[in-house]
Length: 341
Image 1: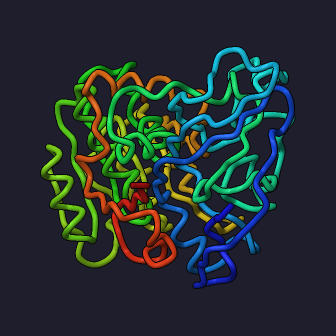
Image 2: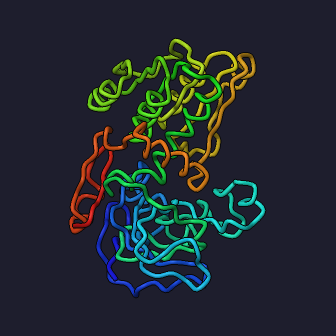
């Protein structure tokens, strides 16, 4: 089969590889139909965050090609969504609903497709075939909709939902403040979710004019940031930090209202990132930082998509032919989608 490989920092290329085999009697082989580029994928490939070579891509909608003898819920020909994290569904963590912490599939970056050995060596989705273990648990039936829209749901949409969905369920109609930047599509998806889930006021701040325009089109009040991040903004009970910058993180935390909830959907790579803990303590701020638990959150995101309350294509999306994947994977785009003919 053919797969798109990260070779080294700044270099992506097609490669021929042996067809993967069924992982075991509970596994499946799927054929990716469309793959979205996660907000982390482009810097991973540009700067070599994880050592290569490895097959790329982990946001995908696919067709089931083959199943093991013990697979009972999925059938050949099913169109499915594949959570980007690999989980078994049966270990203590999975039985507790903590699929992103699966004890069976551990790895440096957590068991995941498209991260090479750092993700456990499970292969990448920009490939003719992808082997998926625990198919009855992992593979979720895809609702009606374009493959270009569906493939964005398993990671970045789940990440955006976790920043506003549970919080708005607890505080219906609450105001949301989103500071955009490094996690470009996630921040805009968070705007879309916040509006779709009933926030009465959504504010969005970013340095990028195009993303500010996209946020405004989604219904947010926008502010174009010029210069450094301020100490804080007018406080909101729900804040989302997607800047990837220390000053942006501090601004988001300080802009969270008393006993409010701040979620970071960016990645801060320094092992010693300082936090304004005394101010957080004084104001009773709850701060959450994590990878999105794809298998746990995806059913909720799928329901919102099927109900028409969330449309990933409302965020600027560049759809490119599958055959041009090696040309476009490193190119700028708020959201890049590769789609087969």
